Length: 241
Picture (cartoon, rainbow, N blue to C red):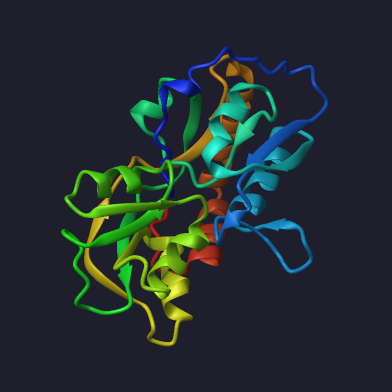
């Protein structure tokens, strides 16, 4: 659940979505497994893709997926390049000043440190994080030296090649990477709770679209579909509704 830190540049003129449009464009990053990623067939895949398609079906909407880099994902929503963000985005007060959110479809989860050794200096060393995230902001304020990268893969590579002592990111993103590392990477330090859960981002002017998706989210929560998808993509330890 990445948490984008907004800059003043994001405060742009909004382009409202008219519900008369035939297609709802769903913006995602496509680079943050298991939330969203590009699979071996070159198609967008992951928890949020499966969930988003289910929500669109229940809302009676025709939806298409649009891939956008994380660091410009909010400005391009505001500019009208797509109609929603469904990309592991945590609901925060800062972000809510610029865009609107549905209710959450993931409960608040932990961020964590991963390093190549258990002796990594988390408070005084170099820690990598994806640029424009709350994780990056947290590290910048922690006393450690922050090194930022545009993609999550680069934050992991920085630890592997010795450029950073540790990486700080969502625990759910890091867990499979650690498991697949064969012991080369490990969790270190304490987990940190950031953000208030993950929701869909929309333009402030799109209240009708927000209401449709909130009703659909209510539905997948009520009949257990959301919990089934959470466990499918994140495992039995994921927080469910």
